Image 1 (tube, rainbow, N blue to C red):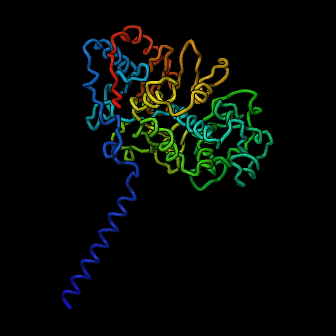
Image 2 (cartoon, one colour):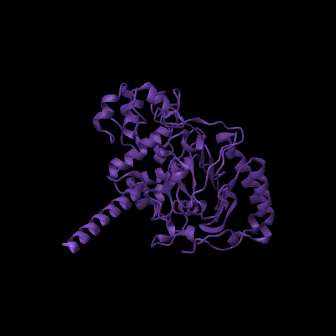
Image 3 (cartoon, rainbow, N blue to C red):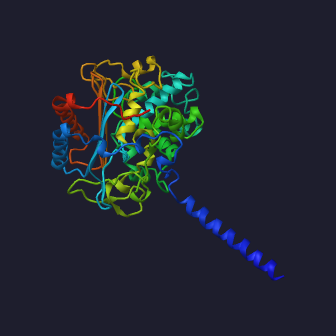
Amino acid sequence: MRKRIITGVLIFAAVIVFAVVSTATRHKNPDSRPCSQSARFCLNDTLTNEMSCIDTLAGMDSRIEKFLKQWEIKGASLAIMRNDSLVFAKGYGWADQEAGEEMTPRNILRMASVSKLITATGIMVLKERGLVSLKDTVFGPSGILNDSLFTASIRHRNMYSITVEQLLRHQGGFTNSRGDPMFSTRDIIRQFRLDGPPDHETLVSCVLKRPLGYKPGSWQRYSNFGYLLLSMIIEKVSGQDYETFIQENVLHPAGCYDMHIAYNYYEQKYPNEVRYYMHEGSEKVEEYNMSGRMVERCYGGNDIRALSGAGAWCGSTAELCRFVASIDGKPQVPDILSQESIDEMTEYFDSQTFSLGWNDTKPSAGWTRTGTLTGTSALVKYFPDGECWIMITNTSTWRGPGFTRYTDRLFKKCRELYSPLLPHRDLFGS
């Protein structure tokens, strides 16, 4: 009898322990597994600052450090690729000053609208599989997003003519005359009398009730909302959630295993993710979810995760180089897209027409992709001679999106002085 009682107590205790562990696991970041635990070759596990501490480039290091000090930037990551070979990868300043962590090449950072290049590539993957055409319409009974919720919300027939290509080129008719829907969550909650922050379906339903700013295809206006729609198209067509599809069909084939959709708060950050900082004089703002709490703008001022393919990816500059190498048409790193698709993404028309995913692809200037969020600024610059420079910071500046122009100038000056001194090697390793 006593043995049976003891056995029962042990079983009961085991059940309690299992329940506690299960609850703790559910509340953890589900993607918090370090890259090194993956069976695949992970670039971020192989790189250190010491590998790019090169005497002949000490002047470049000094120039970059001076640049960061001038703009009061806590930390930045820089990676340089030449003809699909990673020749330089280094962190500057602090990844997390309060924790005493210096920036290294393995740190991942929010890349803001550089995410759009990843999303556009996902669309092209689906196009090559015959699952999407750039001429497909988005809404209405024959559109990809033909959900009854969306169709019932549309008040203006022009919306039925919006195509996938128009979303890619920011020509879908959406403007920010009432605020960017991706960054005005509190206003949308109040205007549409919602109980809380809208999910993607609810947000789209709300925006579709508003008139378009212009006839689709007749003009262009930069639209984060348009790239949210592209993210949802990827989900609808693939049958997978956006992050999973992109990781399995775009990033992993490109050799990028440590890119993730970012979370909103410091406590949710990935193990090797940086801390983000606001510029001097920045004031706290009301939390995006109408909680009434006052928060740092980069940690709760906006719903970063809800940006999805419009601006929520985080990753290292080195892996971002690897991704670019996989869509540039050069032979050294196998491309994940056909040459036809790469040509289509980088075709240049004029200064008034966005390229697919890229900001600009003017042949004489190279390919450019920028990104800005509170707490971060990113610039991808692919030069005509095959060099690609990528820098991401973990600090906002008072110049906002305009700050990338200064980063561009820094790149040009450093290339002029130090490009011939860059080592001839390949840190991609495999």
